[in-house]
Image (cartoon, rainbow, N blue to C red; front, side):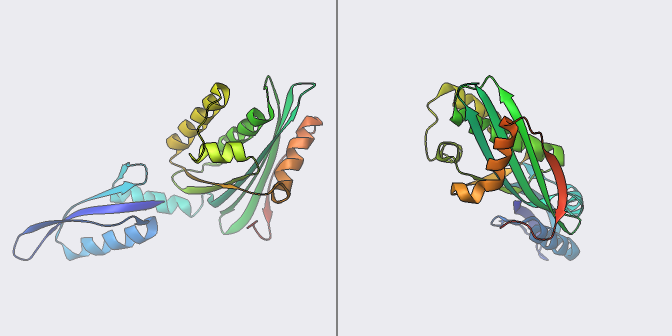
Length: 222
């Protein structure tokens, strides 16, 4: 997460000056504000994140403390498969993250009914990924999201307009969850072979093989 600082400073001559910084990493902001407070001339300070939400210095301190034990450096891989004959969808999600100094990986899948296309299955897989992030306690940070569906990636990052009403409903649902969690997504389209884990999980879901495993790994996926 990045924040901007706006502070009122009182000079030795009792003049009040307002300054506004560029967006900086949260930890950097904390150090600067802490140093400003030591001058004894800081009248007020307002911190604003990428979502235009304001933070107090106390809230920032609590957030940074929580980051020591909460998931960070999160990378999400998602994939959806669709069986047209049975009208069943397989959803696969892989999430790499760091927590308590360890590299971790969550693998999960789900069988979904009542979907109508492969594109909808891809959106449902992304939605499942966001649900998992919420369960993990991921919030107020940038999350890298990788998928091999050009439709989903390009529509979610705003490069393509969402013209299908069904897919638009999924996109709105996902955006609302991300906004509520304070997550800033960075979507990236990848080749299918780089999404093999999520693809396999989606296939296994269609085979009625349920998987949910959260383990420490020696090295996170790049």
